[in-house]
Length: 512
Image (cartoon, rainbow, N blue to C red; front, top):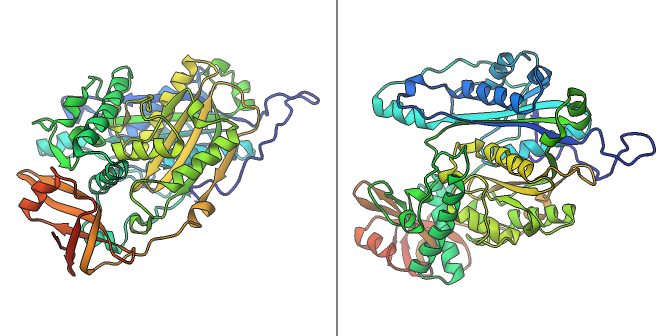
């Protein structure tokens, strides 16, 4: 069974149902998060650690304890696992059996950093519609242990988790097209710095002013991680340390050194338990632990980066945010807590700009994927779990969580609060509005003049080794080209190359 990852199979109507006849009270079908947990393992010997599916069970058990009801996991109807880089077929079945619900529905997702928030949106809609009463979401990665195993020359054990999911939530969709792939533009570490340099040029900043501003932004994220008990890197880093290449902070792709990249070498798992209010009451979950999903949105920008109008904005985020604010009846800048998806600084800057948020305010509750930790597709489960914690600590406050998959491609937003909602959970998919926007034409093997729109330079062990450039032709089409001339590469990391005229040779190589 395949369900759309945008939650478009159902929708909240925004109405209020009476809990008792004649009284306007909380709808008993209202979805509420009643348990959250995060698990980190940092071991000198990776052979002593749990593998991802075991870490999921660990997080699920801790979330059950967080709900303050003994045996609550035995009531779970559906186990929903976020796709990881592990090789399991159906880890949800393993988790279900481990927590004592072997007959529970199992749900899996495709890759994508948006999938956690999208699945929360979908789960909330199902609960509101009376289709589910208690669901468990979980996910895990052991990138830290895997890196140690590779370095040590040994393999970690992998439990067989065979079989198919009962439900496949959504599909992957293309993340790169012919034009990008022809120039080797597959890695996020190549695409996001191209967005970054486009942001710099659009803002009219010098290279020095830009990297200073961005490193200060990332230093503020690091400061939050220092106070987050479940952050992977809890030692705060200064802006100068973050932007300065060093033995421990090697350049990766201009203008990003290592400390501006998502940190995927982490062993982290998380879990959420979502119930309907009537079930939470019947089980005796303390209301002090309830955090309500208030509203959510989903959309994706044009899948192919080549088709987008520019490389420094996201209509998908902007239109999603506008609809979310309209449903809430409030500006998103009024949120008390915010976690903008933070795989790279460009994602944060675009997200903040499109949502109307001051870049100088605190934009993370975890420390982000660099410092809080980046367990790939499951990061947002950690940001939601942390948002639940900070909302509980400040009753009545609201938290905004954003999620991003692909190359600033797939977007899901959600707002959470301990305050009882005035209307039922609301959800909107604004895909029709995004799809109505123009698509730029592109070409693969251009031969002739072009202008660099944005670019990056990728580093190897001996320094810069290749430049990727997005280029615009006179007729407005976009193409991509590369350069491996060391003299040119050295210039590209010290001078502004956006808007530079170039010649492309028909085989995807540009020259000045």
